[in-house]
Figure (tube, rainbow, N blue to C red):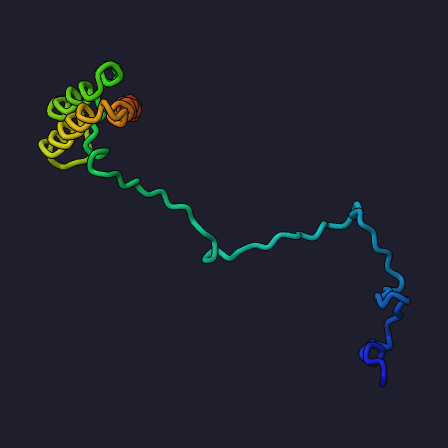
Length: 150
């Protein structure tokens, strides 16, 4: 049987024993030459192929949307009250919806009732520890929203 590797070789080029092409008259080096511009090695995407990052508004649940952004002092007082007696700070914050708290609902009364419901559920689940943790988390949200409201 005839060796097929030798039949496909270009007779104008010289090969060494390991079947590699040896280029005559040209030196190859791993370090770039000082006067030669280095070749770019990255691939550029066309403008229509590039991905863009779009900032979208986070969709909150009904309770979180009702959480009011109050003045910092009132938010801190509600946070302390939620630590001492869970639900009381949330109850006070529900009334702030009408005077100084901004929320994500169109109607104040809807945000008010969601806050009242959250306060009742926090008070009702104190003994399961869930209400206490939820109340502390709610107080932290009050402070975060007060910082964003400035």
